[in-house]
Image 1 (spheres, one colour):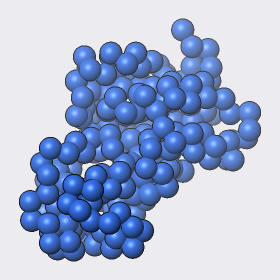
Image 2 (cartoon, one colour):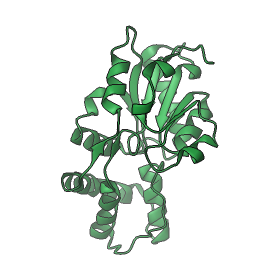
Image 3 (cartoon, helix red, strand yellow):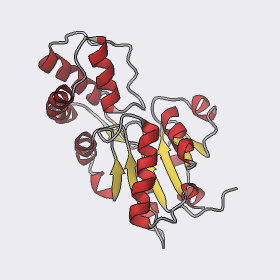
Length: 229
């Protein structure tokens, strides 16, 4: 049993908070087609749990495109417009229990800081969450355009949390909520606790193999008090 008080809760986006039914994937594909004349990007690349920049680096490598900052900027400048376009034309939804879970956190007498830890670039994250009216829930965040490695993003989130809450914020006072093995692993990389939700790309069986602190089918199936310490 953990006795640490939870002071910072960090959420992944895709598969954890929202389901866009591959609007982001289609935005990637359309950007590669329109900007780089790649008509058949590899279908074998796994998107779940990855950072946007690491995905594009892999696409560039496979198709012989120089992974320069100029080409990354060219890609993402077009991608955000395609993303907005696809979201408006795709049926998507907020995950079960998301609103209630976050509102319950905010309703605590001493609520934790609520933030994002996502592989999405910042503008992509904002476009997605504003589409579902969730963006304003979050008080801080770390994003995929800040570092390509999710473990490094977790370390940055801890550093950023300390800049807001104080240097006495310990890793055990942080909970990372996500739907992939990458979310669990990045929590463990900084000594944080993890809530693995089986609402996205990974099964409960696969997530349980990494020994997250808690596992739940979705945020509707776990009480906020469970993670508060």
